[in-house]
Amino acid sequence: MQQLTTRHDLTRRPRRLRRTAALRALVRETRLSPERFIYPLFVRTGRGIREPIGAMPGQFRFSVDQLAGEAAELRNLGIRAVLLFGIPDDKDTLGSGAYDEDGIVPQAIRALRDADPELVIAADVCLCEYTSHGHCGVVRGGTVQNDETLDLLARTATALAAAGADIVAPSAMMDGQVGAIRRALDEAGQTDVAVMGYSAKYASAFYGPFREAAGSAPQFGDRRAYQMDPPNVREALREIALDVQEGADLVMVKPALAYLDVIRAAREVVPVPLAAYNVSGEYAMVMAAGERGWLDVRAVALEMLTAITRAGADTIITYFAKDAARWLA
Ligand code: PBG
Image (cartoon, rainbow, N blue to C red; front, side, top):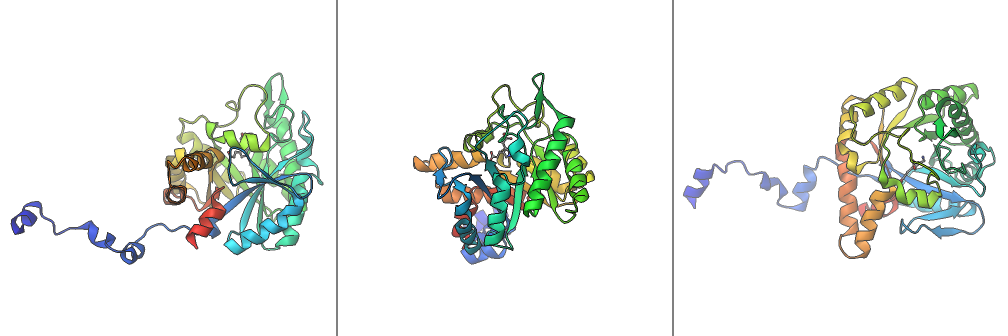
């Protein structure tokens, strides 16, 4: 035995620091904290409604009156931030529900602000939930018009800010959207409202369950002419640089899991906080496998969130937020 050790030179043994739970915790490089989570909330009209979302077990569409209870639960769990998505009753070609000052999301923001003055309220800025065609901007001749859409996104952002949002998060992938929104917010005197750019948002198949949840699937074509092409990473850095230049306070990479290399590349160069969106399809896959007994949901979800953090995300938007907060407690 003595001979074996010398022959293999085992004076270096990385296993020494893995021997007990306390040793592992002592040298752990990445830690998860519920303070870093942003919990997405879907809001709809009606009263007393907590409607389960089929492809996202454990997630619901809430009516506005249900939000105070939800805010209390989040506070107890140590989750201090939400990201709001609205599901309007009516849609039209110009997505006017998005920039209605009394629309569904402004109502939700006021209810949450009343329930918890310290909650960080972020709201998605996009038209796809509000347009009859399901695209993220104004459509003319079958294509989404960039510059015309900017005015509507800016109006949406100011309506959300007026209702009390802390952060507005443009996700439409229109060129110049961060700058247009920053300018409109400043002109409206909303200089303290932050902009989180969905800077590197890919045209991903992982958004499927979200589109069911929000009723926002495009009615013709797809989003590949405005969302990013999945094979590209240098382009993501360019998108992020443009958003920072236009005044983004935070930037985002989305989805997260299939794009950990993009998160890492961004982390190396961006000067502002970096968010990653652990999207609906990433959640649905784990939940579906868990229901079949094929995966341990708890272990897999925590491993995924750890990987996203290790890759370099400062904050994670995740449907696992509440469960993860319980598991980490
Ligand atoms: C709106 C938007 C989408 C998501 C966030 N904002 C859908 C899309 O771009 O089609 C997806 C979030 C998720 O899948 O969890 N544009």
